[in-house]
Image: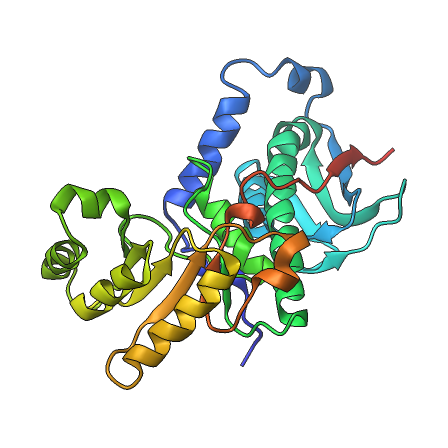
Length: 295
């Protein structure tokens, strides 16, 4: 069996390709004067990585290159940690075609690589630190993604080695405090959700106390998110809940928020099955790339 490639997650056609066309259209809504200046002479450009990071976003750049009738040869495989010495750069790909089309795709392609690689890099750091600390569970992102850019950000999480968590509101039911306050109880919320989502969709409930967790488990929730617990309180509650329901109900425990590179050693416990964090994708830095015409 050939090696698994994340690019195979993307269908041959679909909304993701339309999104890329819209990105290009946004960047040149009328005339491209720079393109007029350079014309259609055949050129070759080098795409360089200028700082250490995990390469991600390759299939999206590939599709943009294709849309602009260019060719690209990648010199480094997606998912590779590229080590770049300070002040230097590492060639990542070669792009060939008419000069004006190279310059048309340049900035948008670089923006995608920069953002995707930044997320993949931070994801790789966090999962690596988690494993070094002895944590065996799942590290996941969140739904706090950039509107219009979610697909690329979720894809980058996978390249970095973490779980994407639910993709959107339709992927999994998550009942939070506002849902529960609106209907009056956790039990009512879970029963209403199950009546329409069926057996194939998981239900997660945000709980702010051990008693709320017990109610959610009793009502049939699949995942319990323990929210607003102290570090010590979280470990104690997780152990108590799992002991109490052992052998009677199957569920996963999740903790959301608060996880960062600097506190990972003291924060993680194997009593929690899933840690979800937006720190791997919201407000993360980018990886610097450039594209230069060979001359």
